[in-house]
Length: 243
View 1 (spheres, rainbow, N blue to C red):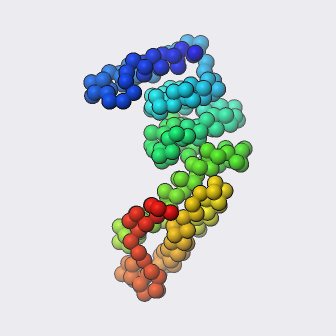
View 2 (view 1 turned 90 degrees about the vertical axis):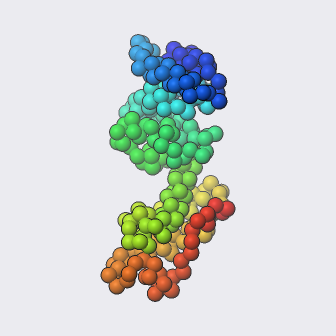
View 3 (view 1 turned 180 degrees about the vertical axis):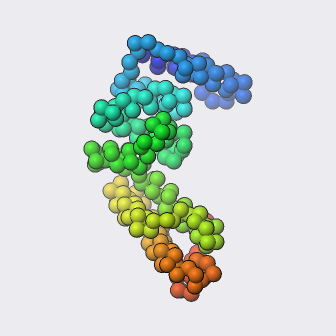
C-alpha cells in the first residue's frame, strides 16, 4: 500500500471509530494534521489506488484532511489531463453517504474549494454527464441538489419573497423554470418519486413572482399580489417530506 495511505490508516486505526473523548479527538486531529503536512518524496498515488482504499475504508475517508491531501490533488491532475476517472470517483463518494449531497465537507465541495471555485459542483456534474450521460452518481447528485434548491425556494417564501426580500434566491425566473424541467426529467430517469406537489407549486409561484416584480409598486407585498390575483398560497413547512 502507498505510504501516504498506510500512514493515514495507521493513525485512524489507533483510535476507536466512535465514542472518542474530547482529548482523543484532539489527539487524533493533531496526528492527522502532522500527516497532512508531511512530504512524501517520490510517492505517487493513482485514482485507482484511492478508489480501492475508499472502498475498503469509506468511513474513515470522509475526512477533510484526507480529501485535501489525497483526493483533491489527484482529481485536479486528472482534470488537467482531460481525464474523467477522478470525477467519477468524486461523485461515487456519495454512495453510502446519501445524506451528505449538500454537505460543505463532502469531497465534492472540498474539491471546489481546493480549486478556488474554478469549478462549481453542478458544473462538474455536467462535465461528467457530457462524457458519460448515464453516470448514476452524477445524476443522483443533481436530482438531490435540485430538489433541495426548489424546496428551499418555496419554503422561504413566507420569510423571503412575501416580506419583499429576496431571501429565497429567486433572481432568474427563466433559469429556475428550466431547473424545474430538469428536476422532472431526472425524477423520471432515476425512477424516483416525481414530487408533483413541489413541481406544480414551483411552476405556479415562479411565474407569479416574475409578474409581481414587473408591477410590485401596485401591491403592498407578494402575498397581497397572490390574494388579489386569486393565486392560492399555503404554508410549506414539511409539505414535501412524504412525496
